[in-house]
Image (cartoon, rainbow, N blue to C red):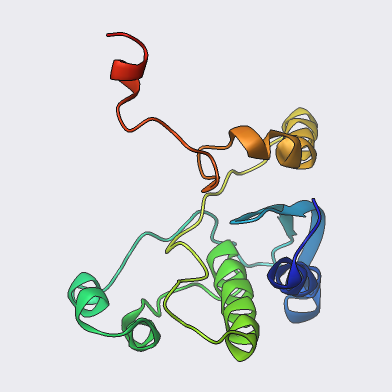
Length: 164
């Protein structure tokens, strides 16, 4: 994957994650044109249970504020209940740093930088880790077929195109 300037910003901030979270080690990652894949290894501090999994909670007024306010004002109503040191805190910090950095180099803020949430998978064993590493490393090879690739022209009614 050849990164443009925005991809380079995302990549630079990704590799900085361990300097902000001392209990984190990064493994395989790739910055794609519209998303990032990466393995984050979190070592919980002694005696502390780490929170894993995406936090899907938004305050009651989030959706109303999202549609009523400009994008830069929406962040004031985002949930603040992210557990420190959790994957949610790591992802939130990464997205925030990239967004701020990109914001200084953009002339327009009409397009959001990130989707609202993220996908996660808890890696439970070596076989799973190897499979996910391969998936991440092979992901750029499949970009031309990726359903999230905005440059792919798809028929508006696939069933009609198939002769149904």
